[in-house]
Length: 215
Image (tube, rainbow, N blue to C red; front, top):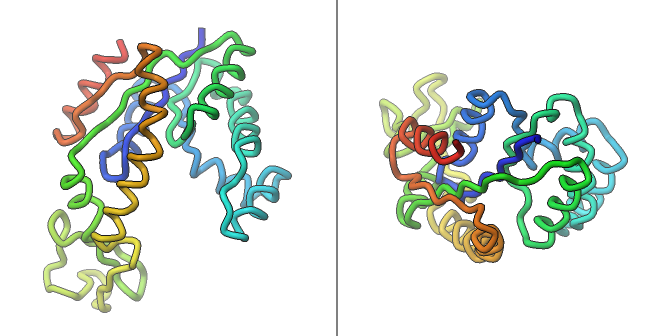
């Protein structure tokens, strides 16, 4: 049976990094909802055009469009053994739809690792990013500071902070994520599929615990 692993985690928990490492380690496809949207919009598929029409109006893309994109994606040959799914489902309604799609393929979600970290850690990791004005090189005031404050090491241009990277904006994004995701966390917890992993640890240790839990 194909193995489908749904990876959950708030911004800054390291979920995206772990999804890529797990995909390489397990030889499973990595399906990122963000990549899937970009691919459909760039290729101007019917689903991509539909999604863009809602996004251009600042509206949420309806579930049926997102679900249809995922349904198409998992029929590709690289998903014959399953996939690491990152960014989908986002709600119990989407989770139900995903279960039905997989059931039709004789597959199922086998595990749902939830990479967690305290809100203060998430804000510290995700906030505090600075970009250079010339070419967009990224720095972080704690984890990757420039040699000279306010100046890009590579091209010497001024560093500035985007609104999205300011700590107050990041804190709001994280709170919204946690509020919206809690019903999904409980959905998988009740089904005995949720595995909580401490995302504050070094990347290698998180990977080790994830692989041990998935076995």
